[in-house]
Image (cartoon, rainbow, N blue to C red; front, side, top):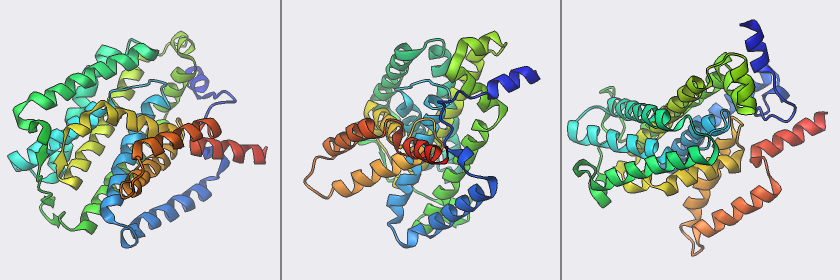
Length: 331
């Protein structure tokens, strides 16, 4: 067992680890504390709803990155988990009258169950076949959301009450809602960080780098990939359910294939396989969407042009390239 663990932890020279090795433990702790302080103070300087949107999509991108960046599985169907959880959360809170935390948990549980079904159907395929199967399954969820009575069709579920968190905290207050979303996003990120730095995460990286070798060492790679797929789906669902409460809305946009494409874009822009890359990518895309919407510029064209430039100049993504530059300067 020791030999297995040591082999799984070996990293090839070109692997991306997010740059954690460049910083000592105390430095990482200080930087994390500074970042947390900035996030706590952010709603007093920026529009809280904008910040909450950034946090929700950052968590969504991090969940997607757990699958593609650390397992090597490209899913084109993650909108099914994001949007499906949004619908379940919105419906249970508005129609059933459950509290927001229960609604978010129910949405997350639905996404995890859906991830299990998708995973069992798709996990034995690789490459483009895996991507196409996830896309096809996600389109089935889209058409179900369009046709089922409780989803509201093209109108979606609107006027979802935010309610009171644990029956005490009034989430109609923008600050209370923001700090709730911040706590959820931080919790999700910590789960991903702990997963990546656990023996389980090291096996996932070994599968990404050389799956036949991992199989030869005795690992049941399909079980590891399925577990990672379900975890990624659950975290994507957590982001979608939270977003439904924040914006008091769940629509077909949340389950469309364009949403799956957006999260791919966010992850690649920030840096696939890095921990902070998806956060940077999500913040960049949401910021561009927010500020370009007030201009006459075509938002999708501008974002597409920026993506092309980043692919040509920052082939590893923004954070990935910065990590490479820092490693080069210290080498």
